[in-house]
Length: 369
Ligand code: IPM
Ligand code: MG
Image 1 (cartoon, rainbow, N blue to C red):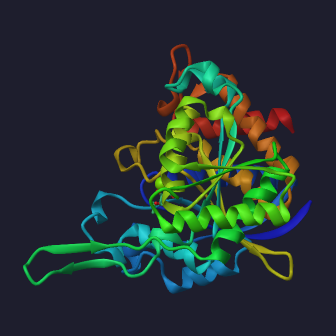
Image 2 (image 1 turned 90 degrees about the vertical axis):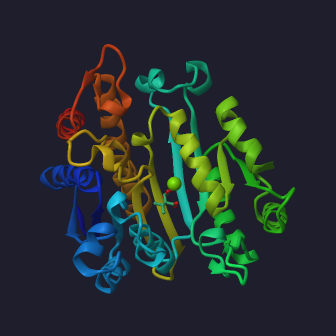
């Protein structure tokens, strides 16, 4: 059995705690089956941390995240905290974690599970067997660029400023992650920017091309403007293998890609840092969906994105590819059996609660083990 690994769970706000509860059950299943065990601790982030400590990310939580082998996050944010200044917003907690842990590479796979083909708004033939990976730069660009702020001008009107900025090393390190992933897939990378209007986009394109020419000639690289990419994603998503893009475009395009798969409730993500001398890399795993305050506390949310994020953790942080595949197969079988939370309901399937989806998943894991 794999020895203890330190996990920090940050359930956060809204549906975060409910979906995390189902992840705990999967962790517990692995432990009971003596397949893998984890040393699990839990802490607050986002609005929950703000209410308790007056900050969306306490210093002690950040330290615990830095010390953990992997962090599992639920979701942050909600209407209760919407009016707060930026520095206090729940989202700041997540952004600070990403920045301080230097999680520059965000992997967002969009994979269509056959039983959910009918849950997508797109035609079956457009999405059947879809399997693409968005690699989103996560610690730079307009999310963190300086200067930023809102100022009042002498005439009393106001001016809001954000800065889109990228440097060569920032582009190269995330580019490498994209090329390396492509080597294990179909060896195709589409690099996405707006080089037609933005200097940072010109730089992005040039650095990606140079990196390709120097180190990754075995991978096919193409370039695409972000607006065209959004259109191509809904027109013919299967043309893509790995999409490499910046922080903001990656945010938009990954929501778009999520809907190809039927629901935002299905999409996991991994946020990775650099590999250090000991071979260890900081990592955070979270569903792509948000805190969904409208359905929070109703036992309605889809826990599968969180559970699939846990599977990504097994694969990327602990090299447990078989165990990850086991979880993914259990998800597929639960869906095949007709279990559906309300976000993926289709005629002829059974609506289940968050907890019941967890029950179903454990049953499927039992069958597979
Ligand atoms: C995401 C989210 C976050 C982002 C928010 C919650 C700060 O939309 O992870 O995609 O914009 O990065
Ligand atoms: Mg987003």
